[in-house]
Length: 125
Image (cartoon, rainbow, N blue to C red; front, side):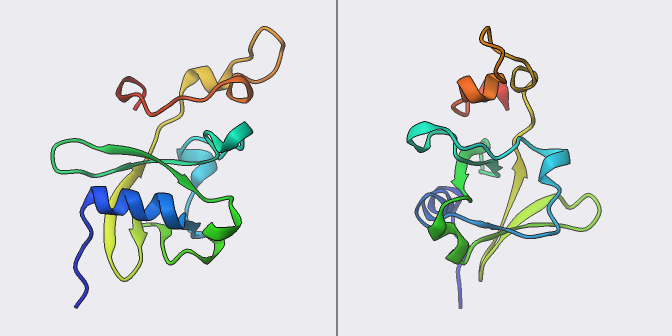
């Protein structure tokens, strides 16, 4: 019998194993884009894990080589069921919403998300 991971345990699993993305997911339309910046900061998919008292923000590796072999997979539920992470265990989550600032350009003319990344501030969620 497999027990369900707590949100904190799942956060650690996601950081260590990364995650695959199922083709049912509509990331381009519903979430922030996956970006790759220097030193690996912000190089994943931003998710909010559904915790007991509040959501837990996590930036999940999805582009790294090790993530392609991960047993964890993001899937989209039917209708209004939202997203969930599937393994032998299941956990509810939601995509982090887009920030208006990521659509702007910095003084050098580059997209602002190429110049900076958010760090999961609760005010941005």
